[in-house]
Image 1: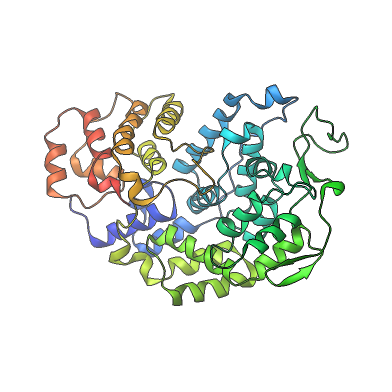
Image 2: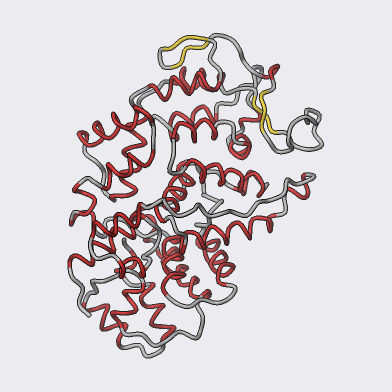
Length: 416
């Protein structure tokens, strides 16, 4: 079957504003406007995530298998959830505020951070940032629990300015020191420690007054006895913060770097109230979003490949475990980014290791796959324009399972 430019643009919209192709959405949307409306629709009830019980002690807290059910639930939401843009944004913020279970070593804390991201993913960046600066998993991951008036740790203060808000070039080392002092004193209520508070929930965070540096500080030209919220007020008031977040989300959704005029326009509007969905709508309303240059401008991540596979073909009963194992071998598993800068992107994903191990995802596929025509099979992955070479390669393979593997490894699926 030959695809029309219109249907290809519909598939592009669905892929960019959700995760994976969602073939039923592509088929059901008659045009780009309908696809945009479906992808941005938040009217369906929010999914109910699983809850984890607070661990009673450190040994229970470190049981890594506790994360398996939440991990599977999240993958299923990415593939089939009723609010596609929410899942795209949850992943975006998960990558933006990268926190790894490898260091935190407490699935309960990492999952609760995910729930914080989910609560604010489509709402307020300001509220998300204020929650994240107190988030127990983040406090552990970036050593905030060791940051006190007598032993300053600058890890979170530096990353908050460099990665989470303003970006390099807009602050000095003195600003890092001031922010770190303002963020000092926060600890996590871990059971069995000398500072454990019986009046607060276990594993919650709280400010220990004797550890907080309450002296005057000068941050980005503003002087005062700044605490965590005072410091965030200053950072959020600086024009570099909304400009950088707007530019990063633009590149995530459009696949192209915005020009200075676009950044100015989006950043100015975003900085007024830090509402996420109006920013998303402004980005997708930009002509660049459906331009020819934006098509196939992004390298598909291993997570996107995994989700596309779950959407496209019948999978095994234990498919989510198989997908998890494959993503771990690739080194691209949710809840375990390689560092605070987040997951690799772009051409770094085209290395032989990542491409070869992407075929490990095939372990999730059921052997009872119907024999599909080439166009129908590619269409299941949201690929509606197939090169003659790829078509010949897949047509020459008679085994349905190996056909899926060839599509998964095709140049068309490498980019999105």
